[in-house]
Length: 372
Image 1 (cartoon, one colour):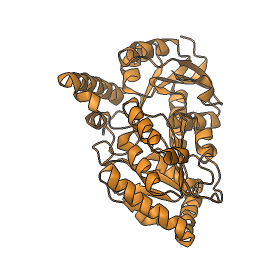
Image 2 (spheres, one colour; image 1 turned 90 degrees about the vertical axis):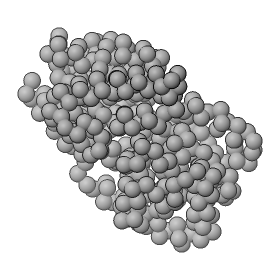
Image 3 (tube, helix red, strand yellow; image 1 turned 135 degrees about the vertical axis):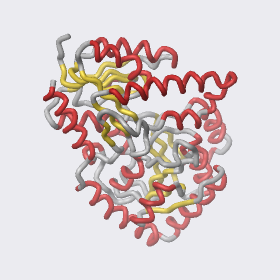
Image 4 (cartoon, helix red, strand yellow; image 1 turned 30 degrees about the vertical axis):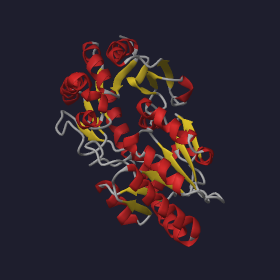
């Protein structure tokens, strides 16, 4: 097959607005590589520096066949898959065509399945099928020319060529630190669901009437009805919570400019116990103090930098009340917020000057292209 691009990214499960996808594409294009993206959603939300083709989001059982069609039509010498369905469906097609397979693993999918209520429906059949896909995916990932994992603990722990590519902030995709708005405002950017603190955030805003909140990201269907009901039941709350939906990284993070705080209120679940959420580093790189639940990785960062507040994990109401108390303290005593912001600005300077793991990623892809 004739290759018309250096690298193709293929995903039948991710929207082309995905932040990690944008960071990876940016790193490769900066090295002079030609890149195409085959994914879901609006092509206008994809990386502007790459060729983008999109499909409508398929039913979950149609993801693998779609990924196979994507892989067959992809023009890259190196093909990067971004989700288990795509890796399983595309692996054989890619390797039989003489191209190079790279598998990018965003999280511990076995742990993630344990977090999802739908996996236990129908006597656990969805979970059984899901675990089967994860096992097949892990086998393919181990054999790929390059296996990218988003953190040290993410499986597989051993592979033919394993590279830890953390979700570090990329300054080119973020706004510069800015002075805080005259009125206190919090921001959340990411997937919007209960386990990521959705209803704890809503409770915090209910109890902190001086604050507003911008939520940027897709709302999980399972939580949409309850979110609507929560806002509809309190007009004053609804006026202070703005839902922006999914946005590409540049547009998403522009909303963070001028915010007083970034929120990271993950629940204590198997998938999040060891996770370091990408938004934590991105908030800090924007100079935003962070309010986070006290999970191990967040604790290490915020205790070391003093650039935010840790609240105990727990039920949504308790977490929300703790967050609201700190919000109110910051708005009533601006000097306390100013100290946290000064620490965040110091961390922003460090993060923006550090060598990025995406440079190592670009090195690894360049080497694969050279070998071929």
